[in-house]
Length: 457
Image: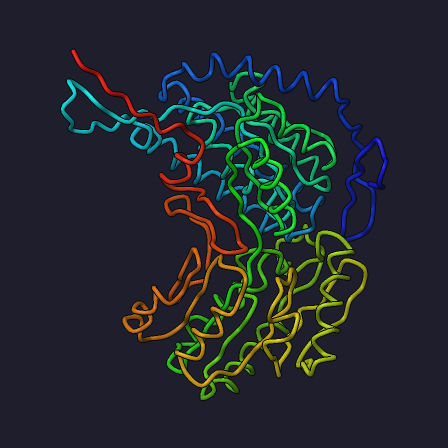
């Protein structure tokens, strides 16, 4: 898609072949979608929670039956291995089940004892919510917004990343085929230049974005100008701490997955490895063996566990970050070869705090490994980041590690597990990683009016 183009072309990043071309929607078509959303909301908000959650059963069945086809679409559009695409659909299915089971309880009125005859908190939907979503988890990112948001009685507009336009339209079709009213969930095929105008429309009541820090600041500024709520899930620079007592035989696969899943294209991936010095050499040797064993092949092959990045320019950006860090003294321990969108899994050592690979978010299969003296130094270095999504620590002394919770400002702290999102737990960050929470009870209450009701006889 070139600037000024009137169409969106999706391209298979692994072979450069064109997949499909889609026309942009006109201003008139987008206005019609906004009006339809407003009209549908007037009726949708009056439905009981039970009526809305009944549709989740149909959505679950349709998504489950379409798993193979939709997984292939994900892989073709953004390149991830097919096994990971299938796992993404499975995670969406778990999400649907979670809110099907819990939404009524989460949204129930809360009675408050006061001097009134009756007083309570009512959780009322806000209206039309705009979502601006990324390409790295094209179904999961959308579903974790859409399921709680629609179930709470809102309606949704999706501006998805252009390289996964097929996924965006497939998601809209899923909602329609599952009985959701036309207009409850709509995809906007437009560019970012129109987003400011859409946010300014009085029909849009709030905005959620998953994306870069730059995009988050832009969306927040525009929404703030119109006094509209935002939820921002932005970048991350997660530290992975490995202490001398860590059970490498037990957790090494988890540690590798923490960096290399989705070809390293995850905001919550382990992006800085802080290894206690007495175990450093052993960890480096075993970690390198695992990285060398990763299988680059056709991403549609079930045996493939490493693929290309979603676009060639993403690989170029990673290459530049590595090159600048090498100029400052980083050493290439393994890898560092690029071919178009393919980037070889890479291990860097001799890392310092002033390097791009320490300070910035790196989106790809890159593992900078740093030696630390002890837990206190590791915690100090982990906190030296403008981001605040999550920290993970591997140790047998989980009791001591658990006492460091207050020392980590991030939105998540995982001991002996990779940082990951779970429908049952709130997900989000601090600092430059954004604000607000998705998933769990907190997620479904992000876009509701927490209304005080006070009744006297």
